[in-house]
Length: 247
Image (cartoon, rainbow, N blue to C red; front, side, top):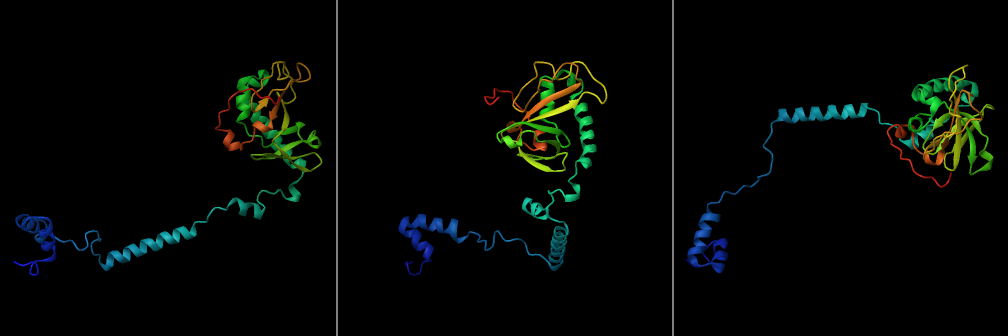
């Protein structure tokens, strides 16, 4: 058989192999090989399955359209969701919140409100300070020293404080030390308050020394620069004690 009468594939094999080998390869691997025209195509479907899939897809799209998307941070700021309305900028409105916070912090501290120490410091580091009455005792900006009021917003980098003059002050945490006074119990003095010497200091706060023994007050200070976390993040964060050269 001449090369012109041979199939193209067999002619190509004859160039690389002997005639017997070329015939064997062509017969075993090419001539009787099954040719799959569409091996990866899905099986044919009927109209009923197509309609069912179309209904499911339409239902999923409808559910997705009915579910409202959460607002982005930019949209929330644009709508003023974080702004305190003018009629709400009154110190008297937040005094009940401060009373609730005092009960909350006393419950967290327990008996450590009289002794302080590392246990109290760890609890204060993870506490929420919305409603706490704070006072700026040290700051890189001298004009901020002396600001005192109730915390109405505790964000990552700032405290928003409302003063007794019904003014909202935004105080950055960086470079600022805040003092907080917690009465040991309403209308009752307790010995061994946090005014004793040896107040604990760590990277988040230091227990300040009170003016004298038997004052019945637990006084501590927050180092704002080491406190730049959101309340939700502080609740699960474990702080490590280390030396702070700024103190």
